[in-house]
Amino acid sequence: MKHNIAVIDLFAGPGGLGEGFSKAGFKVILSIEKDPVACETLKLRHFYHQFTKSVPNIYYDVIKGYKNTIVIKKQ
Image (tube, rainbow, N blue to C red; front, side):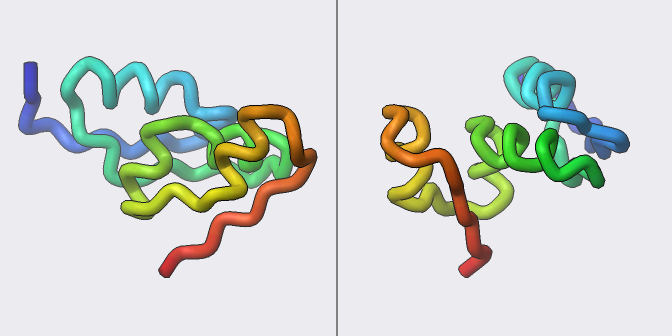
């Protein structure tokens, strides 16, 4: 079910709440987090890639356990 309510995820942490809202049909328009470790986890979440409209190949390497570092650039 789609909702016409925009969500801003402040103090997003690793992004679980934002992903939950996204899966429930809300439009998460912004996630904000300053902790570097939480940001790296946030970047791995599926809904984050809806923001950037791209999934870099290194994302799949991390998921498979081949890499310990990810770099995501906005194109």
